[in-house]
Image (cartoon, helix red, strand yellow):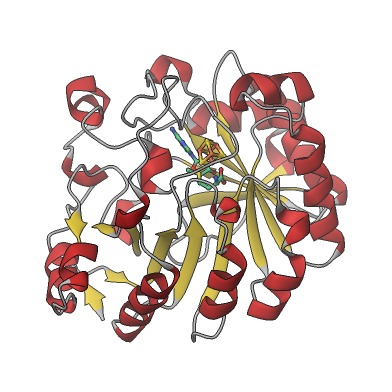
Amino acid sequence: MLIDKHNRVHDYLRLSITERCNLRCTYCMPSEGIDLTPKEHIMTNDEILDFAKIFVDMGIKKIRLTGGEPLVRKDAKEIIERLGQLPIQLAITTNGILLDRFMDTFKKAGLKSVNVSLDTLDQNKFELITRRDYFDRVYANILQYLDAGFKVKINAVVMKKFNCDEIIRFIDLGQHHNLQVQFIEFMPFGGNQWDWDKGMSMQEILDKAYAHYGKTAVQRISDKANDTGKNYKIAGYKGSFNIISTITEPFCATCNRIRLTADGKLRNCLLATGEMDLLKPYRKGEDIQPLIVENIQAKAAERGGWKNFEELANPDNHSQNRSMILIGG
Ligand code: SAM
Ligand code: SF4
């Protein structure tokens, strides 16, 4: 098992299969764009499968595909079907644009759970934040997946002066649909011009819910082990919501996640700047298991090693991190 020096067992791998994306979300991708890693330094289909097998041998039980946008990779269907053969729970985080082309593949691979990123229910605002006009497709795909019985979560990064006025609309999706909305606090990454004044805290999101529904109607429901968010439900609603408070109340004590970037670098924390290259040694025929153990053991107790909010918020620190699109959320 992959256990770090703080006794946390790591059994969940977030696996980025591409740095490319068909959207340009402002909080994720710098306005000047990104320098893509040359193709020869991106993991091939076979390498992805080999790495996945190595991680499964080391105790990984769940793999979530991410990116960039995982579904834009040309061989995404084959990768998903091959990963579906492993003894793991397979999931995906996607912007939803291409979901309608993948339902059969997901069914074949036993992938039953999709997280779809959607920050607004307003078509014009969608174009503002993503710099593309795909709202109708994403929304139609969400409904299609709900109808087909998939477990659907919506990821929304909540920001002041952008979508904080839509919190109730999002929660109300759960009135008739059995879905979960995950409100995510805005996180700092290289090139995303992070400033916490733009973000909405868990408490501010909750206060909006309390003010609208009344305190007793907003029910705190149980969290699963290793949940990154705090779960809530409105009395009588089919769906629920959850708040991922990475900034104001980090959940590092129960973290079980590690990440592998599309260029084969292991990251033991989203907010840490350090990465360990696995692809180069693997291509040289070296045994990468000891490297993986070393990297996980060295994981910082909290927030990627930044001791407090002030350290994390310091642009000299977080701007050293890669952009989210290159890491894989
Ligand atoms: N393209 C896919 C998508 O958008 O779902 C997968 C990759 S994306 C990087 C994964 C998740 O990271 C998305 O839900 C996105 O909202 C989230 N994300 C990106 N930048 C973020 C930021 N600065 N703060 C919080 N969440 C962020
Ligand atoms: Fe692309 Fe996802 Fe980043 Fe948006 S959040 S730019 S969809 S990778």
